[in-house]
Length: 405
Ligand code: FES
Ligand SMILES: [Fe+2]
Image 1 (cartoon, rainbow, N blue to C red):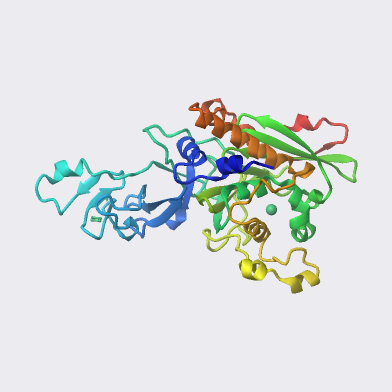
Image 2: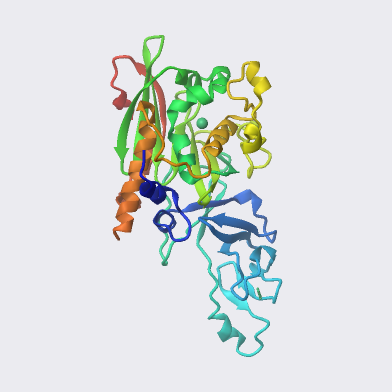
């Protein structure tokens, strides 16, 4: 349970709210799928933390990231012509290079070059990694280092990324990612049929161990298996929003990251990156949707029809009535909580340890930020991101679970 003040501090990210300011200052933010930006193609509108931007791929393949509003009189730069490594606003023809330099102001025939120097175009640094365009929206000239998450630097084809826009606050997304207790309940129709040991074993109640880390925390689930061994599976919460999850069979070097990026206070992009350190990621429809900007599917309805839940299917044995995808089940429940859940009315129990730890971790950081300090969680040079790589292994019953970390 949280007070209204604490809930606001954790959930509000727009209009100068401290959480939004902190995240924008200290972390790179995923903004668009690389494949959706075509050289000299249409700029993409991007809304993050309640503000509007455009991303575009220039003639030379590099990506530009500007405020959406033209600095002249606010026409949308999404309408701009994308040409000559620049965007040209269609209203009066002002032209801005992909690096963010104003290069032409045709409505200023006198002193044009001098005039250009003073046009306040807001533009932001970008990086491409794992098929995603990441942006830094902080103040100043020095972006933070990119965290060495387990997918960073893998060859093309070893990662895949997709996302879906969901009407829920970002913390609801992060909480469902870290909430292992719901796996064997909400997703039981999938976990029963998928057959992978990693998923069938989640139906047995594990013993959880939380291990604080410089990046957030690690979360080990230890289960006794019928054959006398122990199954140890670790997930990590990496600030500000990454759930790093072991995927599939033990000993397959594969993992997934789920993260919830604020569009504004009441909407997120719910992102997924799947990666394989040793070989290309298998191309199956479940992990390679035809449109990476809208996967997994949203529930097929809204609050007026119980989000399109299929009661007939439930009579036939489906647990939730959302057969579209495992993620659809998550979206249905987090949307049903309302856009920003009132955490002063919740009633937590033993199964909620990880999400309580998520809140504590974020709360400690945002309190430091509000006090004018650099939060410990943001000192990237001091953080060992490599230990966030997930583990999924069987060990002998008398083995110490910590030995696998
Ligand atoms: S509004 Fe863009 S050039 Fe005038
Ligand atoms: Fe889930």
